[in-house]
Image 1 (cartoon, rainbow, N blue to C red):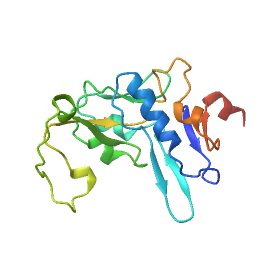
Image 2: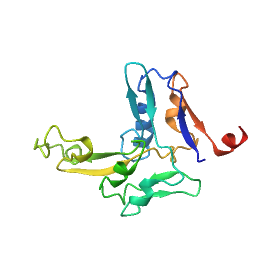
Image 3: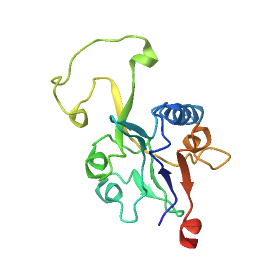
Length: 172
């Protein structure tokens, strides 16, 4: 089993602090500001959805540019510079832990042209926007953080998120 983040839904209050901490940590590192996890909420349960860093990761296998790779520590990561936004990894992920995000050029030049590029009922995975560089966004376990601990785990106010290390799992 690889290092991953585990959620205890009974403790989650869907406050969004995990998403905000993730976003800020990546923005400080010069990466896309989208949170690397999603928040699922229904009438009875709330839970963060994050990458499981699967042993046989389908996202790694389908990436045509080798932008999605496994590190020596077993963490599956996306190289944002090599990602072409093809969405194959997002489609292949059995947990829905990869989404496609992008930084609009309007954020750089300050001009926005509202041009629809898709039908409103189109699935989010098939949507795109003109002038936005699309890139796969998924949990990278906050590799750029000096502490080495994911920001979502550090700032979760209810301690619903915890980091599972392989050695700890093997001792159980």
